[in-house]
Length: 351
Ligand SMILES: [Zn+2]
Image 1 (tube, rainbow, N blue to C red):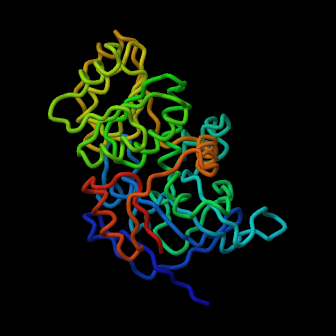
Image 2 (cartoon, rainbow, N blue to C red):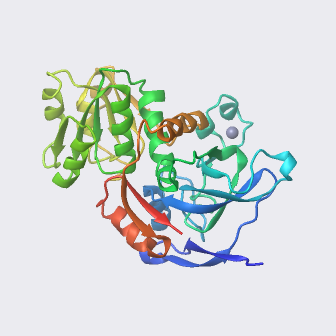
Image 3 (cartoon, rainbow, N blue to C red):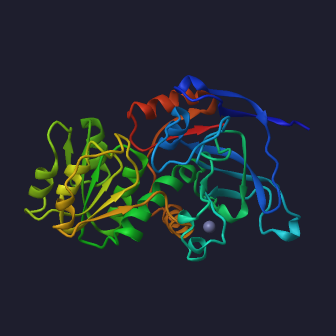
């Protein structure tokens, strides 16, 4: 039997040249697991963090070699259990919740799997989906309806679970609220636009390039501020009749934090899920507490956030933006596009 597959492997930290598509052992599913034949996978900034060896406060150490790939979808290819002991069958179309959790700690017991004391991410701390096959726990699986493409299913998990966590679970967005999405271009920013629009919120956005602004407007962003030469908070205040926005979504980090906080109304919430431009911003503590403002951290979301977000995607109520597709063999080009911030939405690779 064939025992190797093609996989994108990171063996040393560094640039995209450190990712090599090469033969790699086909993983074998154990009890409670299945093997998935990957049909599509999507890139995330976490893939670049793994590649670069990003370390520091709030980051878990990573081991190499590693097959990255947090987002993927495909067909069940082999069962780790006897067929009578599992609801899954070979050929089932599936997508996976990217978090691995213990199921026993107080956070898991409360349904907050992404707070698990031993939380790990598929594709960061164990081999992921940039390969022909990946092994996952059956607890992570959701069925993909026949009328939803593997590309759409693979593009959604991280972006939509995180956007759901920020806007729905944490910020409790309601119709008529105004959301400012900072740094439109990333997968999570386009997912946040779609969810906020679906809720009935008014959406404002900032982005670096006019080309991205055009996409943002097409997605329903009412007003887009292009460029970061000057802080955007005055513009955000003017755009809300002097009041400030209800929620800011910011994954940019140090470069935009101060303006993001100043864009909020009194009592407004800054929802954060990343720090692409840096982790150590300068901001005023008084500007937060004197105005009753809140900061809401949302690294991915729990199992329920994932299920509900994917349900909306599967129902066609919201749709991931696919930026560009590459064969897995060209994953260096795909990662370079992400690293250069050239994309709007998700970059997808197919084995
Ligand atoms: Zn746990």
